[in-house]
Image (cartoon, rainbow, N blue to C red; front, top):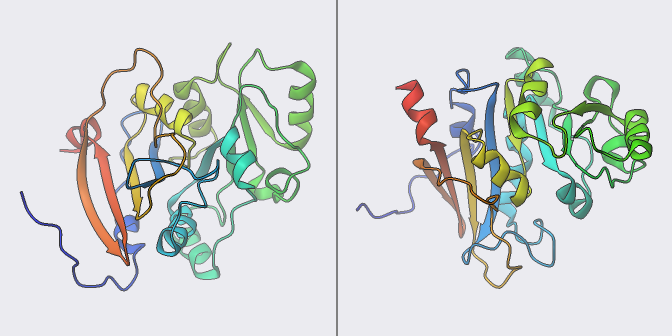
Length: 253
């Protein structure tokens, strides 16, 4: 066992994440989860993830969107965190365009119920070139589905529930090859159970005593998934861990 020590400061904490090769996904597209947890494993404080996030984590969280072709988020996270369309710096947009990506990644909201505020910023303020996507199922309420179609690009990915494989197949069909999942825990658990999580970027916040909700909630009957630790960073008192699925790792070796 090797001790983890504070190393030489990294000029740009985003650099190690930009250098990861995500061009060879095992399935439809490469899926990166980006989550934060307290020292006791909690994933929120009073229902909000933002309250758990430290300043270094908030900075990396915003900038990590630069890697994504699309940012996928569960409906509860959209409601509780007050999401808006993605915003990146001018230099980040230029780097994306140089790599052949769009200037901004759109948001993809996963929702079975479609109980969403269609006048909220994530829908109403989305530019036409990055229109928000709503991923739902065939059993969604018809009236809510009609409202969703007015406010967003709608994808049906399953009959009674949103199925991860079908959702990702649809995103791949739009040409999105790198999907950044920002939660919530239940949707992340669905992705893990479907063997669709290639990478997990986990920030450990120096806090305890939040909500009794873990980073990932596995659905009933889910198998155990194995991950390999690829890198660590420390900023102030926040620990940044990057893992890759062992099956993803084996597929590239």
